[in-house]
Each structure stands twice: as structure tokens, then as C-alpha cells.
Amino acid sequence: MDAKYQLIEKIGEGSFGVVYKCRERATNKTVALKRIIFMDQDEGVPSYVIREISLLQELNHGNIIRLLEVIINNWASVDLIFECLDLDLSNFIASYPEVAKERQKIKGFLSQILCGVAYCHSHKILHRDLKPENLLIDGNNNIVKIADFGLARAFGVPLRNYTGKGGTLAYKAPELLLGANYSTPVDMWSVGCIFAEMVTGQPLFQAHTEFNVLMEIFRMFGVPTEATWPGVTSLCVHFTKMIAFRTVVKRNLAAEAAGVGAVGLDLLSKMLILDPSRRITASDALQHAYFRI
Image (cartoon, rainbow, N blue to C red; front, side, top):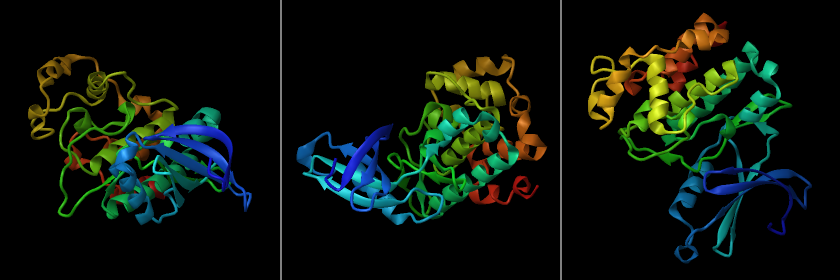
């Protein structure tokens, strides 16, 4: 550890780094230290580290984790110092299952997540790895903050689509799983999966491969067609295999997320539309009737 900080414990691993809980010696303040070790030390600070730091320095919002300091260690690694919160949403759901399922608690957490996502998107930033483990909670004040921008990236104006992989399987949007171009709707699909998980206590789509996650999605919503998602049949070489699943007994979102209520189900359904062009935006989701009841 840097002489300025005393190690307390390891608290997790994020994209490209290990996270420690530390104490700042001068102030006795608790902070989170994310250490990123450079794979090729002769090349200097990697571009992905520069990108994460620059994105975090640009963001200033109450529902986004605050970067306090950057320390470069002999060009071999870098320490990112963040404010330290109590726990993440995944631990909260596991530790306080009944509290986590309270409608007002879910509504409060979801509105904050959407506020953070809307802010990111308004500043032309995709997170690309939204999941309960990357949502940190200040338990004393019931505040949620989006963390781990290791896979985030900026996008341009006019809006381009980006290729490449990102995110965690259970929260990956179908366009990502199909290897298609994508943009801001990928984050909204992830928020929808998180919303459902707060209601049920379990990930909505669980499988060990991208193909099997797609199958779980299609069992829930049906295999898309050119009518429901224009251009979808050209997205994946495996699409002919997927057509066979049209006759498979479907899962039912209304039954599995019954605790969300009718108005909440309407919002959830708009977040989990297969066609990304029809998926609700974060700013529009915040105006939904769910937050007014």
C-alpha cells in the first residue's frame, strides 16, 4: 500500500483491478483503493486505465462513485482512491432479503440507479457492466452509487454504434449476446435485469454461456422476428438454431416478477424489450408512473 494509506482488508475485484478497504493515515478516513497492475510495464499507463480515469474525472453526480485521488506507483501500477460505501446491492439483497424486496426500497434504489445512468448517457458515456456488484450502497443514507467504470467508454455525437464485448452474462443485452452493434440501450437492459432481481432476489437470466443466456431470454420473450426486431435475422450465424425454440414453453415475466405490481411490470417490460431501438431510455423511465404511486 501507499504510505499514505493503511490496508484494512481486500473487499473485491473489479474490471482490471483489485479493491481494498483502506484508512487514510492523516485523517483516519476510510476509503476504497482500486489497484490496477500494468500487464506491460514498458508501455506506461495502459489506454484502458487512462480512459477509466478520464471518464471518472468527468463525472460529478450524487449517484456515481467519486474518484478522490490517483496515485501512479513507479509506472508498474496505479491506485484509484474512491469514497468507501458500506456494501454493494448484491450483498444487500443476500443479507437483507425481506428489506430488499420492499416496494418503496426497490423504487428508491431504482430511481437512483436511473438517475446515475441518465447522467452518464447525457454525458455520452456507456457503462457497459451494470450489475448489482457494481452498485454500491450507503446504508445510513439509503444512497446508491454506480461504480466500476473499467468497461465504460465515451460515445460520440451523432450517436455511433460500437462493436465489442462487455458486461456480465446475466445482465447482457441481447444485441451484445448476438454480437451486434450497440449503444445506450445495453445499459437499460442491465437496469431491467437488476430491477427484476431486486423484486425476486435472483438473477432473471442464469446460464453459463452466451448462447444459453439467449435461450433463457427467448424463453421469456419469444424468438424475435424481422417484424418485432428489424434486422435481427442477420445478426447471428446461430439464428437458425434459435428458431427451433419458438415452440418451447415460455417463461412468464409477469409471474416471475409478480411482486413488482402492474405499474412496475409495465416499466420492467419497457426496459426488457428485445429490440434496442424500442427500449425505454433512462430519462423516460424516470418519468414513468411507477415512481408516482
